[in-house]
Image (spheres, rainbow, N blue to C red):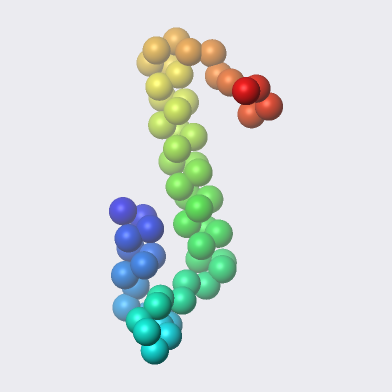
Length: 59
C-alpha cells in the first residue's frame, strides 16, 4: 500500500512514456518505513510465539 501511494502520486514527474520518476529521497524514506514496519511485525511475532530474536549475521 505504501509503494502504491508513492507510485500514484499525481505530483510525481513522468517521462513521455508515462514512467513515474520518484525522487531518491522519497524512495529512501519509503524503504525505511517499510523496514521499520517489517521489524515491528517480526518483533510482535517473536514476543507472541516466544521466539528468540535472530542476529542479522546468523544464517
